[in-house]
Amino acid sequence: MISQRILAFLHGYVVAMVQGKGSEALINQAIAGGITFWDVQRKAPDIIIFKLQAEAYPRLRPYFWRTRTRGKILRRRGWPFIWQRIKRKKGWLLGMVVFLFTLYYLSSYIWVVEITGVKTIDQARIRQNLTELGLRPGVGRKEIEAKRDWLIKELRMRLPEAVWVTVHLQGVVSLVTVTEKTPPPAVDQAATDLVAAKDGLITSLIVVDGTAVVEEGDTVSRGDLLIMGEKTLRYLDGRIETKRVKAVGKVMARVWYELVIEEPLVVYEPVSAPGRRVVYSLRIKNRLLPLFAQGKVEGRFSQQRYGKTILRGRNRISFVELIKDVYQTTNWVKREISPENALLKARLKGEEQMAYLLSPGVKPFSRSEEWELSEEVLNYRLVVEVVEDIAIPKLKEENN
Image (cartoon, rainbow, N blue to C red):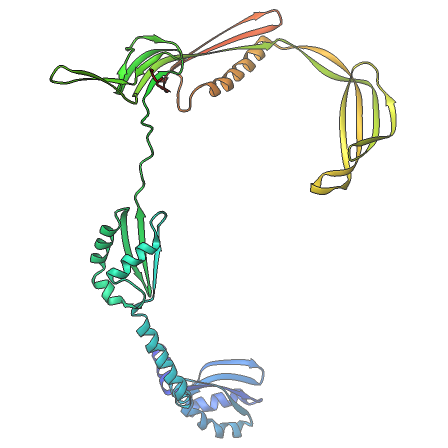
């Protein structure tokens, strides 16, 4: 089937239509006469559309007369008809050939040099180096492909600030990617001591630079000196020199955090009682104008205010607002809380507060808790032990 369609395209075929009551008879008689049809479709009771070889269409004229039908060519397809249209448009064909040749010719050159990844290095300096090395708009693509590795090597030598340079050719674009070196963070070289940030019991001590003044097992308080920012140098000739340095080290210590929480066993809750007063007012800017009120309250009461904007001013601020104040008589009722519930609330509060006290990433080494009841209060005590680095820098004072 595919080979037949290819032959039909090479020889040329037409899409034709036959119209009349004898259209079906025409198809049958033409097939009996040796004419081949394909893609036969009935579009209406008396209209049939079909395809056949272009050279076979004139042979249908006798059948049109016999069956009293009419035929019409709708479309002409195939290479012969395409070639006829091309011959009639020789100028268009020549222009297309010239355009394709020009496009192919221009695509063999580099017309755009794009530089990416540059933050601190001057792009003008990079372009100047690329031009000196031969990579510039208008250079042949094959020339750059031949010396691409050499070009990358030379460009790296000319850009010591770059740690990586690559050159990719994408059509007429040369993409130069430069990865700059990341400078190390600035280090404060001022002479400093390391002191204790918290009270604790030292468990381990690592000194990178400086002189330790404490040992493992010592108990220190906040502010005590741990590592002194001085170093003693002993020379072969017996001389001893003390040099001021920046103390660097790590002092791990056992630290205890303590929390005391008082949780009440008796609370007073407000309960609404008979007696209610509602007051309506109108607020214009900063002035409050009472409108009317109804009801009354006695004794203790609670107040709730509701507002509805009538007119807005600038910046979405209410300019005119209707205010409703509700005063409700309230009695305070005593309610007792069981020790179990009070202890549960105290534990939750202790966990929340301890999370704020501990340093990020530090996990508790051990924990203990105790509580006691006294009158109408539950006293809860939480102690957490952790092991953490307690050394912090402190500027060394100048000695005059």
